[in-house]
Image: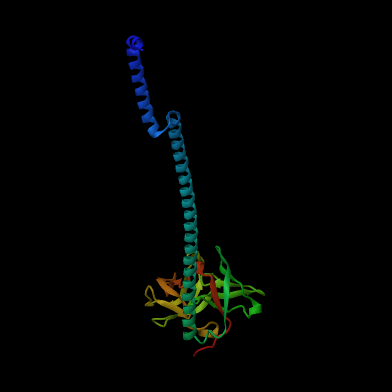
Amino acid sequence: MKNFLKEHGLWVLFAAAVIAVVLAVMSVLSYTSSPLVNAANTIAAPFRAAYTAVATWFNDKQNYYRDTTALEEENAALRRQLAEMEDAIRQAEADSAENARLRELLNLREQRRDITGDLEAALITEHAVSNWTSTLTLNKGSQHGVETGDCVIDETGAIVGVISEVGLNWSRVLTLADTDTSLGAQVFRTGELGLAQGDFSLMEQGRLRLDYLPADSQLLSGDLVVTSGLGGFYPSGLVIGSVEEVRLDDSGAASYAILAPKVDFDQLAEVFIIKSFDIVT
């Protein structure tokens, strides 16, 4: 034994030191995990990191798609709500206009009991303006008691025109601007009488003439002109329009005025036909 130690003692000490170091290292490694597990985890770490990155990217895309879809659905819902609100506003505006029209009509009925006892409401189905005529077609006719010569007004009592033709369920109105229209008129402020009638040169402008005024007529721009009621053909006091300009005729012996009708024919949708009225003296 002594000889063995003398000859191999250094190698024994070296081997013991190596064994001690290995045991120490294994002791440290075994504190956390086994060597095989640690090696496997070391090798898998880059793959695990790549997987985590891919999974994170995929989750982000999923969240983006979900958020985008939710935003699109929310925008679609908001657009529907906006459309519904716009419809409600339009309906409210229509209702407001209808209420205003009914208030005007009620006021007319209270003020003009001579003409409101037999009014026939009618819708305008056609507006026709040409170089020769200005007419409206209504959806009421002889089966509703409408007759040729009946006067047509709007809800304020302003005159629109006169029935010129009647069918079973329709009728045609010559507007004030039509060249075949003529009716007795009176200037509200001065009491001057004249004849309001359509004029070929003024029809395209929607204007008419007030003829047979005295040469020294004192009419002013803006003077109100109403129906005179003379002859009993039409009720008196219906508003025809207002004076825009006073001119002398070609002879210089008489004046005539250019009238702007109160009614805007292009904006009319509903009118009222006076089928009968009481003559007020």
